[in-house]
Length: 283
Image 1: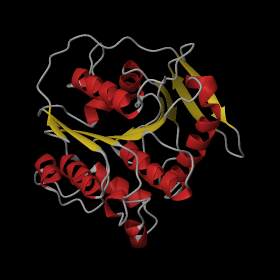
Image 2: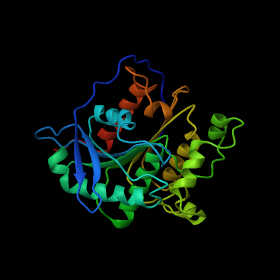
Image 3: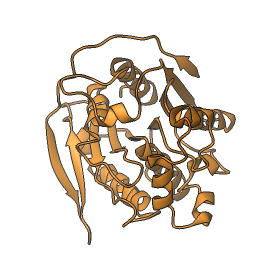
């Protein structure tokens, strides 16, 4: 399904959700910032969220806006402080994500309610990691995912799309190209589906997918192309193209103080609808 959303103005931020910090056990503990609480007698969506930052920057604070949007849409959200490049190159962040989704699966009753459906979500480089973890979960046959949410995702290092050229103009380098160079260990990684989901040869078996992109989004074309490939593979996919002037993905990481980023209200409603469709209420 492809939807072009109408413009809706919003001048007040969504109320912040109380957070708590958890650490995954292991030789190198991974930090999770959890938003939202379970409701007695209900199973809320439980989302593993990956922040943006072109693989080399960003943290749980810069990812707070997207995490709040997910929580405001009815989910319990666990944002992961994954290892960053260039110190930690592919596949370390993806493996950290898989460790986190396995742990969340075991803890889902405590965090979001018995039988809570699991989702992965991310913006920009985090969208890449969410897509990669979904592929890894499919290949390892555990745990079951109810859906994946990709927001302005970085999916393809071959940065020749029209949407990226529109953003760059005459510039010959940018933070996203540099980020890919720092993240991948070498040219062969560009053919690995967990590094570059856009190049994955097999997409069958992935969960229902929501892809959100903006009209002025540099990742717009690769996001929509991935949506088309998922649809051709028989995956239930909803792709949302929001109006121009979203400023995504940068505005999601750096919203002005006291304001929500452009199109946040529409994004929240699409997220809410996706959660409801992918994980209907238990009987």
